[in-house]
Length: 267
Ligand SMILES: [Zn+2]
Image 1: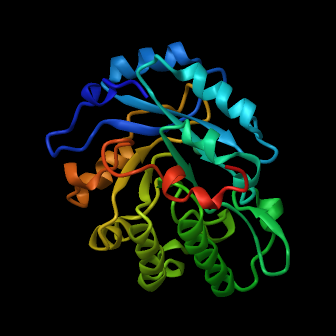
Image 2: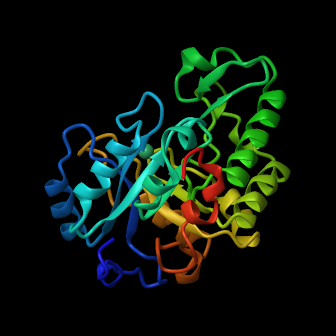
């Protein structure tokens, strides 16, 4: 991490750092284009690479090559951990070379042994019992927050398309409280995600009451959908979030990779 990068971060009048920690070099978007965009829009970015079995980075060598390639540029270097096996393919040492790590609860295996990626309708299939599905989703999410060495919980409260219309009734306040309490206990910040426009205002209010911190994250798929965190900034303003409510990598406390180093299979 560039020592001076924190000085580059601009803030809204309410004090919210203009820091997008979920930017991918995907769909032809180059680092140079991204840096030009950051300067133009007054943003600082965290550039994240997807790490885990079946992803572009699935071993230490590739992870370290990515983080080394980002050194010297005015960006934070992020690892997006994928699937639940990532701590067995990436070592604590390699993970520690990143400024921050995030994951989401969009890939998990249900009690019948079915591994699902929630954004792929064919893998999710029909959900005959949405309440039972929600019970498992909350349990898996809490387990991730409790056990995995992550700094940020991304794409929070994402539901598969077949359930998305019932978000407000399925995400009961009680379920939200279980997730936000686990995030707060483990110092995991909650991402305000622009791609999916998640989480909802009610979730953010419950998370704030639980003393969670937050981040802005676009989760772009290419150059065309890298905006200026319009959803995150709007919903943060609506919820009255300010300077102290936001997580900045390295600004306070230890990294999750160090805090939970025992979670990795290899040191
Ligand atoms: Zn992502």
